[in-house]
Length: 326
Image (cartoon, rainbow, N blue to C red; front, side):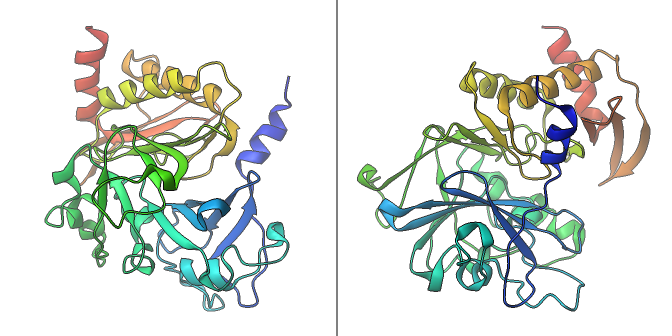
């Protein structure tokens, strides 16, 4: 049995690296090909996790999410661009070199969903790199709706401008999106799974070769799982079931948009689902109620605080009606 203190410590790991100038990002190696990049000092206190996978055969870097755009109030932080960090800042776990020395490798950027803390750095890449997002709900991420659904409007901040290629469920990510017809000879070996729930456009990446699951904000530990008013607990439970089936009994690891990286996937997924079912069956009590974005939200916190939830109360009521009555 693994030691619980070791597991929790690994969950709160602070990625390390070195940059000639102090950067808003730190990087550490997760797998032979993947680095976790943590934006550690953003003004929104989100501290998002960004994942960067090197695919040497395609001369490409696959990036999942772009963080908060380097928004910080720390005057000593000089590198606020994710792209500048990747191309110029030394990373100890990468033999002391930047992850993309001089920008010699191309970028393919995937957005796990459209919330501001995952897209504010995307303009660094929008002019010369494919930006991929979920095709599950095209209207949700349309330019007309993006300011509201990204939460940029609520925060009174500029909505980044980019054009996303919307990809279907089970799409295999490629290095080349220059033509409408997929060219699977440039496959990067990572598959997109639509996992709506947190938002309609939430997606997950599955890296079969390394048995790594990248789930965005679908789930994480030790911080509130937050559903906006556009979310759905009913869809979230369906997506969780699909992910549990995907990882099966394998030793897959899960990497989340915040806090949790490299943990046993099946354990995190099943435990989070069990917590949500306890919420719906009223085994968990409401910790607090408050108004957010025009409606009443509720907070639940599991004993020990491994899992907690904030969402509009309406989402809980609807899920109780549809899930428990089924």
